[in-house]
Length: 387
Image (cartoon, rainbow, N blue to C red):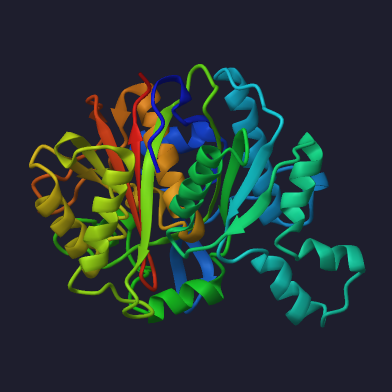
């Protein structure tokens, strides 16, 4: 695949966010630069309280009965309006990609446990993963393809790469991409705790310390993040140059310690984007704070990139938003590019020498965004500031 050049470069030209910080882009950005985590102590998570970054109640009741669908459609609307303010006019074929791992968790739990599977047909249809996509397409009169993408924590990156392939192939004129995960129920969080990766018993900045000594994993978060991708917007946040995906084919939770496929994925993403590793200024890392991910991404930074490539992960702030994780992290990079700031969290312990400490003035250059999904889903996208 040949990267686009000049005016045909694919831009991320609209951003919409619902997160643990609140409804909208502004609460996300304010939260990131404050250095304060989105997670709060929430009761009902086991024997005590737990730190969880839940999306607060809100949205339009007419969008549907759940936080999931209300957040998904609110994020999409904000991104579409924002894209218009960045010079986007929808083409004839607007496609929709929805990155999702666990969909209507609250409705399905209610369906089985509270209502004993007895619901009206209309409410049953609301449980289907296609329904929020179809209602959004109807709202805007979009007629391009609409599809769900699922690759565990790498789902947002996978959707970005899929969007680029659609645009490069001429299947669509524009893409609305939404990544939604509102699955931080006590039941789901407890299983991540049992797996040894989710931290619930200490402050997020203390428990989740990517690339720092003493990190124990991550806190769990929720988000819905939307982007509009187009080659004909006048003022995009970022350009999506390319990317790559691979699979370790090794283990259902662990990264292959040889890192062969991880390294290959980074190299393939750079080659696909026409970018030399020496020009990479930032690694916006998956960075969940687990030992094996820290080891893998540190090895990548030290092997492929120069010592001038700086590293950051926003997961200590946003928490790990699962299927929406890479999307909210790309949104953080996009908003930071517009504002000239890298929204890195503060460090709290001895750290990798290339790790940023707190919000930092942005230098011009390429950002590589990695996302390593549980089970071996490797994904990397390459982003450039607008010309």
